[in-house]
Length: 226
Image (spheres, rainbow, N blue to C red):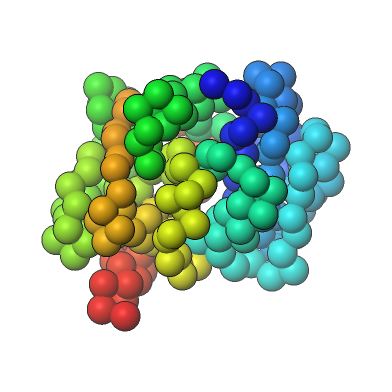
């Protein structure tokens, strides 16, 4: 596996507490192509990411996780990335799992590998998150037609040629489900693998909650019938 073929895209909104440590871990592990999309932060996210050695794209306004990811994806593709890995900025994902995510793309020619927090270690996920994920998976199957164990995972590896085919338009958390829909629509090959997750008080303050979950459901419906 050639690490210089892999581009890491990290959406970051007000992540000054963790973004520098994450980037340093990535660079230490040999991943040189780290793209942080500063999603309209009003803290020191941009400075911390730049100091740590990442390439930082700064959005003047908050566009949401989906908008930030789409910006990062487009930039990575322009730089001839072979594989694009999306991951969260809050240190819940392990850098060592990137090799597990990308290996099937290199070795098995899989188009996209989905990291699953619910394969093998689901009880490490807080109950409220497990319940939310259950309903997210059910809705993704019902509306988008593909069964997966963790439809809302933000840790995935995508072959560049597959990413180029995707017609992604989401601005918020629903981009995770939209990618699942694109796998189905385009007939892409995919594989789920278990990933490790570290939950902290900080990471649990981020991501989906009930209010966001309801908004995400509405937006998934909009994706289906647009």
